[in-house]
Image 1 (tube, rainbow, N blue to C red):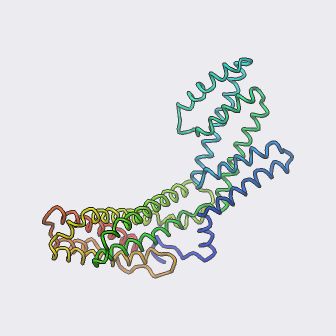
Image 2: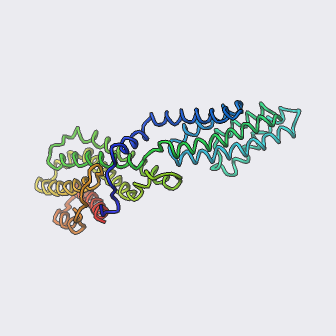
Image 3: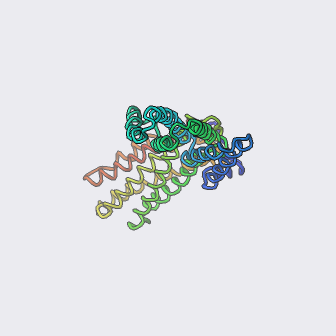
Length: 355
């Protein structure tokens, strides 16, 4: 495959692992591993008191950090929150002893005052727990040490497990969404171009495509951030070069959603346009759909195909399609604008798939 945005189709085993990494079962598996490893290591080493907090912190990282980047962010914030809150809180309780009420009154003022200086560095749920623990343990330093060790090591263990045990393959998810989106988009626009799409079908079709486009945007963002922060990520790097492709398809789907919503809202006005103009418009729309289908085949990595020899659509082709389609009123201008926008995005995809 000569195109830099392509890679070899996945083997059945890799495809199954990619699907599994995105499933709820994978999350439960990692939580189970976090419990077994986090509890087992200190217990077998003769530190049973540290087993529960270590396992708890490990599982919490895996539960709240559902991606590599999220796990890393949560790891940093929670560790920093505990490292700041617990020593300062302990010192404050020690200075105000034996007047616990005075410590309880000053503790939130001092801690939240520090947090307010750089709130982005702290996890609020991890600030409140140390505050209450400090009030409970008072000057019992061994308990505070155990808490800090459990949090730091447990969070680190959870982050490591997230890195190496079935890390979510957001690139596979994005490829799946591109394939599904292309199928939905070309089908509905082709029906529209041939006059087979009823008005009642337009809004549900637009809603489904919008949901898919939103998911693709999320998958693209997760893949991008995970690539920036992952340690072990050959499965992520496989799709690193396709980030521009994912972004372009997401823009294309969004553009078609807007087009379908316009068609639904102003359906009667479109039907009232000059019949000859509508026929020319739909004929040009059908030509764009044909180009889109060629691009969809090139984007589908489930089957190995030769790369496209030439772009299915050039800007010059688009200019010729639109220049003899006059915009005589507001509604013809609106629909011509949607047609042109769709064509420009297909031209960009054509360049990507023949790069």
